[in-house]
Length: 319
Image 1 (cartoon, rainbow, N blue to C red):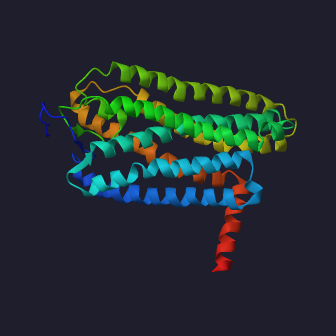
Image 2: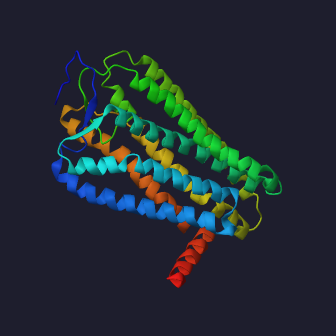
Image 3: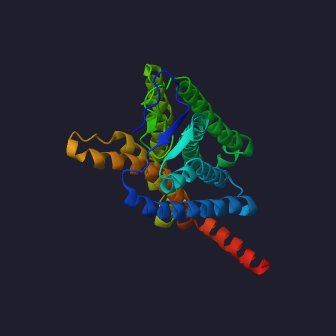
């Protein structure tokens, strides 16, 4: 493990990744590469159909298109770096590149938290107040809602990235992670990080606690409304319009809470396994979730399936 000169500021970092498990690197390179290609293809197709198919020009699919674009941006901010780390024995990254990667990852994650809350509100209005839906969720409402999601996520990321890069890094320059994950970078600072810790706690409440509470309350009202529908067919149709979003929410937040809420092992013999799981769980969160989103929405939504079929048919006939 390298140490930077204590009298000199760190100008770059070394990303450990899976360097302690070389046998896993080739396997994970192929696996992550295939997943990344599926992410680009699946989310790219969803963006195309939501733009090209007039039947999908509704608030729900507008938010879905934003979610797909966000997933592409989020994975692209980290996956190429991860793939490179699997092929490079000694992966280094400059301080500025690390800051950019930190900003993009944090901004995309924060935006997705807010966007999923916006999508829950859309489903609440559609099911609980269907007669008012065209007025409440007009274009003048849902476009600013999506824009504000990006703005809030970006603003929070600017704050945390700025607080992090202002810290002095004058000791260990080895990041025990695949990417410049902000918590891993903060561990290397040779100064008091209490302000960073407090701000991260506040951000967790804003981006995790508040959206989860809002989504939970929305779905309580949604479920109560659905159960009041007299016919079984009506209940099934109503639930089908929000089941995909609910599945995505459970996977997204479930992985986040498991990642940050699981207890740390106190057994020294299990330190290596703990360290490996601490790296692989965020990898699951960052790659598997964006890969599953288009699959879930395609399988559970007949409008999306029909739009994809039309797109494929038009493409084949054009050729």
